[in-house]
Image (cartoon, rainbow, N blue to C red):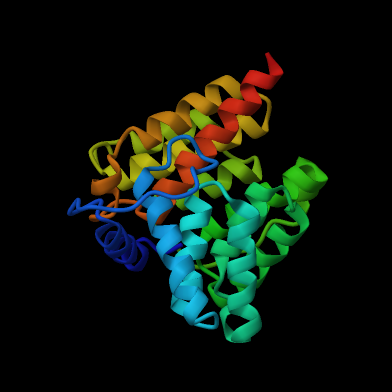
Length: 255
């Protein structure tokens, strides 16, 4: 979940799909996510064809798993990510992407466990702790999630210390937004993105579905897909896009 590596990785992925440098791509099965671009569908089909010839290639399984996640095909993404781990067990602990796929698939117990494994791998990343909290809360309730929150001692990148306090119940959503509204962070787009995204997810989790969905949409709106991979949130922009769709469906069902 560290932005520098995954922003670079995501930019390369976009480039390989023709989204940074558009070219001709074939079309295949339509995505489950209505906001996913056709280029992702075509690239997933291409990766599948390559895997027919090289079924045990980790890089191809990783690439197709990412594409399937972005397309909203969560069970298929899980299959690819789990196959990676079966082939190379050292992929397990750092595989937070599998945790996200479990979460969107609704397998919250497995999601929480995957984020706990990642915590042993990187004990500073509070974004991972937020996902563990979300998984616990969706599966067992907010009280259980608070009781099981992961502990952090080292400082993390902004705005995650303030966000983690929000999920712990020691800070309000308004306080987090005030914090990132200060001059030091006001024009820092990645900080604004993550603050709006996770404030929105928290508000939706605690019953403010419409307001939560609005905050997540505003986070997604800070970037175009192409720019999100150039020094922006990269991979997590796509995840936020999927989360916006989920929250909008849940808000509509609750009306």
